[in-house]
Length: 248
Length: 268
Image (tube, rainbow over all chains, first blue to last red; front, side, top):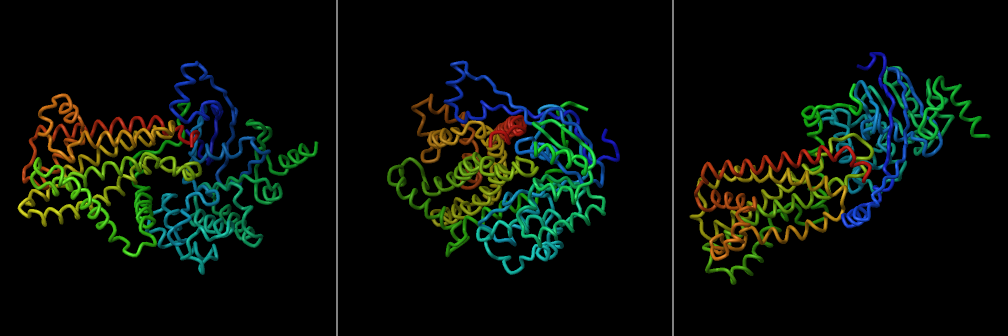
């Protein structure tokens, strides 16, 4: 059982991808390879024996270079990916901040998309009715509500996305690089909201390439390198070590 | 703890939580289908009506003598067949086209094929209305109180379709060529279902007749015609047979889907 103080527990997570079989997408290829006995598997380990706990109410950052397994780890936590080995346990409702545009249908208007996206996150119609004004208010998109979203800029889409994901106070909020899109005023607004959530005991997990942002927001950090935990601890320590390693 | 278990969520609480999503996806499909058309939703009735009139006129000339009330015979049967073929062929690619969403958020994945089946069911209601109109015009004595029993065969068929859709949508993720194969299969399947001809036409061909009788769609379509236009209700045995086939389809489909869904994300 999960420890009561923890929001997330990862135990010896391993994620393997089979590189060669992913390229096979037709029956013909599959049979040909099968007959030639070429169905060998190239194992790629994206996440290797990663274990850590995230305490309730913590703001937790994940840093590392491109391809070190950050996003894979987030996907495992949010339940999108099942790890090949190991166990994940989470407590409470998880609100993933969906990456730009996913979950929106660009042919629909913002108004329709807010309801669609709310239901993607599992919110009821009644709940969305109540929160609709909050969302519009926060995103500052009232004038464009009935415009199809294909005419939106990426920053405008991000605003709506962030406003929907944070309309509740979820137990766990997952933020994957999304803050980089909005203008600086909106970024400030988002950070304020995250700060407010932290006071409400929401656990926040942030992935970002902006070290400054991680340092400003997070209490604890993990540094991943090639799918393994390189270092874990207080943000200042981990970030300093990470920055120094970059210079080398 | 078990080594692979993660985020265990129960099927039923999931289903309840994501009902609004199902509803929104259906209404989204509906809106997108009729956006920017002048007649809008009226096309839902007009389209099947016009298509059926064309097809009926063509085949009526060829097959008039072998089937009484041919227009109704054909239109009623094809309403159910079109539901079947639309639902399964849309479900087939439903997981693929929802890839963007599946990669970002946790959603029970069976929602996507299920949504296509529900959407096709709604379209079916419109074409069924069109079929009833044709029946009333051609020979109003065909319609009786038993016509009101039509939800029974539709339900059997719907369960069958859900099972097959789950299976097809899962397999397509792994082998994209299923999309092309299924198109060919559907063409073959429609001729092995008594849509344009009566079963009695096959009396001289025992082998083909056997195949046609092994085809589940034959039973659903005939059941449907029995209640809608022949004022009869099939025997208990026929009912049990239909239920059994539906449940087997759903069971197998769900089993394959469940086994496959964990790895969808790696293949999208």
